Image (cartoon, rainbow, N blue to C red):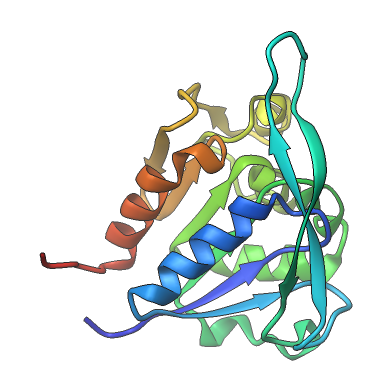
Length: 194
């Protein structure tokens, strides 16, 4: 299996598991994953947050997570050199989608039918980039209106489920990593033999 080169977009307060786990698993199977954040350099870090649900609350709550070290400088990204894109969830998509260069990068992957994976709030970046028209995605339930407004169809899934629409792989939250990574690897053409 040839290694794929994957660009991972993240930022401060990305959900801890939603950046750590996919990047670690994709790297573990031999893919090259470059993690970037607007306005940050290789060696800088982003602070993650840990999200969880508690009975009786209407939404998740957050506590500070880990420092996640970036391994690529954002300003040096040439999206044409990458085979696939991963967009983390958590709080980061809310503001990285405001960066015009992030939008250009996402549009490159969508327009060239390259694999794109998102977790949780990551679909906010896809909506902002205008690449969801006619597409089916899932994500954190609070993103449903943005998906609809941008011309996409929000697919309601359980916490551990993933949606696949051609080159686009999305899951509701970190609790779906098992299915998300398995489906993203299929779209990447990665086979693992036991």
